Image (cartoon, rainbow, N blue to C red; front, side, top):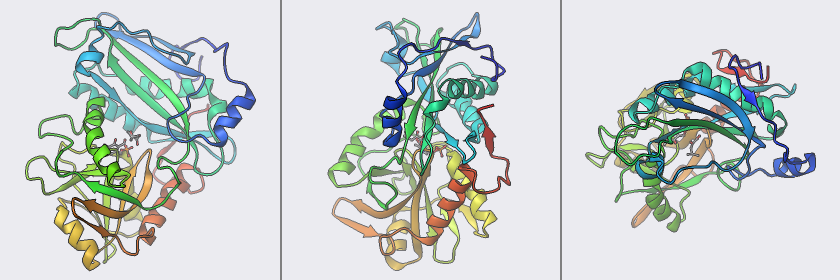
Length: 365
Ligand code: PLP
Ligand code: COI
């Protein structure tokens, strides 16, 4: 393969799905349920560095049961999407930002740094092989999941001397079933997501493992996601299990919790700051207490609340629930600022708006 700038060995999948099988999946992809015909793989050792970049048939990995990742969770991942534009071209949104966050996550988890060109090149190589899997129409995309893990068979607790990097791809519709609608959020009072000095700002699997129990608690209360508070005072809103959070105030300004080491620095979050400012909104990063949220929506000083992230795009938050009570934002429907910002973001991603910030990168060439 040549278009990536990386030497990538390509082994086509002899059992690739038929066009009929693929179009059945693409007609109703769901989220994270179906995977394309190929995957990207590369290996790292201290002696050889990154090597053996290859696109091979998608399938199970053979792992030694002593692989360090299975015992000590030395693993990181990323999430970004490939969007088909009207003219058939395929684009991603700010992939270098994902590449840089992947490097920061790797640093925190004592994994080797993957060069930005390798990250972007791996995505291009996989999309080139599985171009036919990029869905078209509506708000569909090809969700790309780069990940890196400790593959050395060794039980001593130290950074692995063998590391695997991979990218898999999954055609995707909306993250929340039922499409875009205001979701209910459970306030996790018993659990926090990240400790000061911990891994909250890294995108590592362990953070998500720790969010599952609170997520189940939320689901038992009819909520789609959980919001976590700061780990020290248990007072300030941090983020949801898999997305950042924004508040729209009655004066049109928008507020998001400042990142402080325990919150993931979302690329959607950062991009929305710019898009909101472009539209004349004042944007403030500051601590937001849970009481400010509760009282604000009750007295109308907070008019809209929304979650944002690659998977979630922008999802309105209609209801905050906690043990014993709940508050509803506005009239429970999607607010105007939320839908305007959402339209601005997706119009850009799907090539319907001018890319004034140079955020889109074509990846099928
Ligand atoms: N916060 C968490 C915990 C996430 O998993 C994600 C998703 O990647 C986000 C925030 C949003 O980040 P991004 O906008 O870069 O997808
Ligand atoms: C993403 O938005 O890409 C995420 O990683 C969130 C979740 C699916 C883990």
